[in-house]
Length: 331
Image (cartoon, rainbow, N blue to C red; front, side):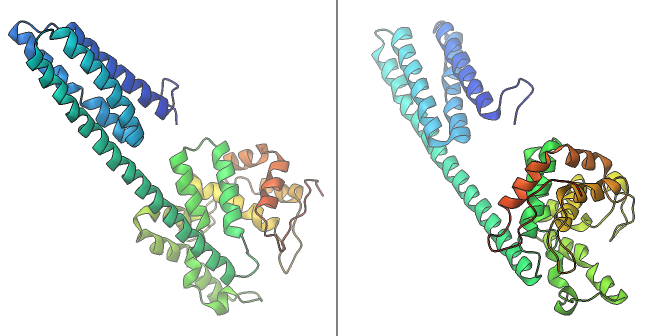
C-alpha cells in the first residue's frame, strides 16, 4: 500500500528510521557539552537513541533491530570519544550505556518477530479452517464442487479492477468463500431435493443468508464477511431477499459477488442444462444490469478480457470433471 508520497509502507519506514537516526545523531554531535544546560540537552538526546532500535524491532523484527542498533552504536561510540577526550570516566559511562541499546533493541525485536509469526500462524489456521468448512459444504451439496473457491476468485478479480483496498479484498474474499455457509441449517430433504421446491421449502431455503449471518457474527474475525453472506441474494433493484435491499444499500462485496455467482452458475454444468459459453453468460449478465446487478460492476466484468475468465475457470476446475467449455465465442 502506498502513502501520499508514493512510497510503499516498508520503504517509508526505512526512510523514517534513517531520518530519525540522522536527526538524533546530528543534534547529539552539534550540541556542545558545556555549559551545564547544554549537558542536560545532551542527556536527553542520548536517551532518544533508544527510539530507533525499538522502532526497527517493531517494524522489521530481530534483523532490523540488529542493523539499526549497530548503526546507533557506531555513531554513539564516535561521539563519546570526540566530545569527551581524556575524560575516561565519562567515556566508560557512555560506552556502558551501549549495552542498554542492545537490550532495548534486540529483546523487543525478538518479541515482535515472534508475535508476527504467531499471528501468521493464526491467520493460516483460520484460512485452513475456512477451507475445510467450505469443502464440507461443497461435498454436502452435490454438483457444486469448487463453486465456493471459484466465486471467491471471480469476485476478487473484479474487486481488484474496481480498485478495492487489500484489507477490503480480504473481507470480500472470505465473504464470497462462505456465502452459502447458512445452508448448514437447511435440511437435506430440501437442500438435496432433485425436483422443484414447494413454496414452504423455498421459504426454508431462503433462510440460509440470515442463518449464515447469525453463525459468522459469533466469530470476531468473520463479522465483516458476515455482511456479505447476509446480502449475497439481494438484488440491485430491491427485488432480492432476505431484506429487499436496493442499490448501494447492498455492500460492494455482495454486489461484486452477485455477478461472480451468476457467471459461475451459468458456465457450470448442471443436471438440467449444459454450461453456457462466455458470450452467452456475459449477455445474460448484461441484460440484467440495473435489475439484478449493479451497472458499475457489470461494466467492470465486461472490461476484463474473456480469455482471462476462461483461464481462471480452467485453473479452478476439478481435475476429475466439470470442465467448462474452453471458448469465448458467442452463440
